[in-house]
Image (cartoon, rainbow, N blue to C red):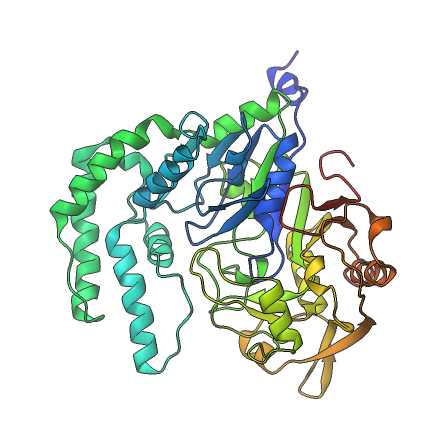
Length: 449
C-alpha cells in the first residue's frame, strides 16, 4: 500500500479553533479551558503577552497572558506556535507564578523554535512611539506598550532574533548587535529616548536560554503527531477579529492575524487540521484602546446602560487594567467576523451582565452618508461616520447567572439569543452565564456535533 495513502488513513482527532469575533476580551480563556476537557493539546498561534485570558476555576481566578489556557488542565500539552512573539523574561515569570500555584508547566509546555523574540529595545520603541504620537497630536494607537508591534516588524523585515538563536551564543550576539544598533538609532535620533546597552541584554538572554532550551520544540511536528494518534487539538486565538492586522479597524489594530485561518500558519500545520471554528462574542460589545466603535455608550454616569455594562461586567483589561469601552451588541460587525473566520458555531458570553435592563438593543446595520449599510465597513474612517440602526428587545428581571440549561433562561433572554443567531446566520453552540467553568449552557458540542 502507498505510504502516503496509509498516512492519510491514520486515525485523527477532531480539532477546534477558538477566535474572538469582536475587539478582544470576549471571554475566550474560559471557553478554551472548558473545551480542554476534550483536548490532548492547546495551541497559541498569534499575538504575545498583550493577550489576557482570565479563568475562574472553583472560585479561584488565574490570569494568563502568553501560556495557553490548557495549562490549567492536568495532562494537557500546551504549544506556543511560531506565529507568537515571545518575551522570554515575561514567559519565565508567568511559568514561575503558575509553578508557585502548584502547576506542572515545564514538562507540558512546548515553544516553537521559530517564534520571534521580544527584547528590551522593542518595549522601549513601543512606548516611545506612543508617547511621540500623543505629543505630536497624531493620536495614540492604544498599544499595551509591551513591544509586540516592533517585534513583528523585525520578523517581517527578516531581521528578528528567534527562539532558536538562543541555542547559539555567537550567532545570537552577532544578530543582537546589528538589531540593537538599528533600534538605538531610532530611539536616540527620532524618538528622543536613551539608547540601550548590548552587554546586559546579551547576558540576560543567555541566562534565560538555559531555562528555555528544554521547552524548545518543532511544534508543528508535535501537533501533527498528537493528532494522528487520535488526540484532539484546540487552537486558542488571542485578541479579536476586529483587531486583526488585515481585517480589523486599521490602524487601530494589533500586529498579528487574529482570524481562524491563521491557526494553521501560526502553528506550522496545514489547514486540513482545522475542523470547527468557534467564535466567541459577548452579549454586548467592548473595546480597549483607541479606534472607532459605532455602538459605544457613555459610561461615567450611574444609572446609564453604559455604566451598568462597565460595572456589572467588571470591564477592565486583563493585561493593562484599562477600563474597557462598552456598548450594545453590534450584529453588523459580527456579520463581518462570521465572513472572515468561517465560523461554525458561536459562543455568547456574559449574558448575565444584561440581567435587570429594561430593554436590550442590537445593532443590525448603520446609516452611512444617507444610505443603509448591513455589514461593518472595511475603512476605519468610514466606520467613524456609521450611525447604528438598532432592533430593541424587552429585557428581563430574572437572573441568568450560573444557569446551565436553555430552559432555565428567561423567555426574553431566549428570544434575544434566537434573534442574534438568526441575524448572523450562525448557530449558537454555547452560552456562558458566569465566569466559572460550570456556568455554561451547551447547545452543540464543538468536539462532538
